[in-house]
Image (cartoon, one colour):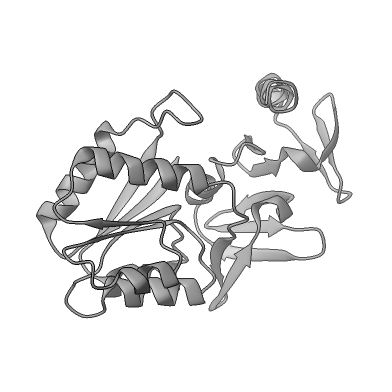
Length: 242
């Protein structure tokens, strides 16, 4: 599931973006329709607030340039300063800011009005870039923003409304539900849920014997009995089919 942020101060423009996304079919590396979860923002301040306060980190940003308050370019510059490397597609009524757009590494610059074909071409570029870069995940913990590479996460443990992220030499405690964390991780093929309490990075599994998983950081996790067969199927599919 890809998270796509849509930021424009006109509702009709947001509606059009969602209509284009609903009909988009990426036929570059896969023949199936990508699954999206979109979130709308009517100004740059609302987007930046969610990034700073909630650790929101979209996989793709569709961003208008001319808006009341901060411009789309200013929002993109701040997000880049925070270390966020998601692809950005600018949507605007003028070519005036094209140079600034490319200074923040935008992959496409669409001048309104644009048609479905141009939008699809921009999406092909964006989807081709997602997953190729080592883009960190952004978490907020104890008033600080943390950037964590997905591959560095060994496993995650749910403790009510907090999630504990275990890395090789440290751990992070972040306030979010297990469902929200899974939304961030499920697009990475190495992650799998193990019961209700754990999300495991299967690349860090040393062995599975009966209902016990041995991880390469020395930890052992026990799979719920009714989930053993299901998890083993996911694990072997990851190694032998992927």
